[in-house]
Amino acid sequence: MAAATASSPHSLATASGLLLGTTGLAMGVGALLGWLFDAPGIGLLIGAIAGIPLAVAVVYAVYSRAGA
Image 1 (tube, helix red, strand yellow):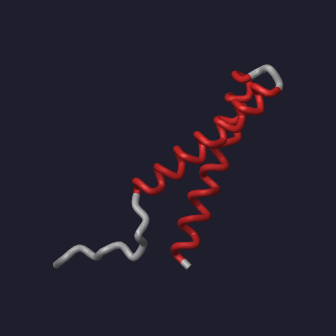
Image 2 (tube, helix red, strand yellow):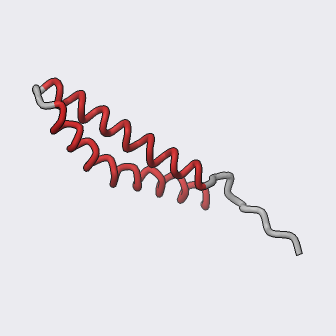
């Protein structure tokens, strides 16, 4: 019996790329804002902390839209 193909074009690589890209973008924005306020390290940290749930929300939104 042949394996069934996935109905979604998304793969684990797509989810990983979305997670890394969104987290990296949030870190970059945080570092930029931190640099404007003379504390790029703190901005980078805040961007990383905020970027993790943001990245999860982005992946959830993309995959929930694909299933509908």
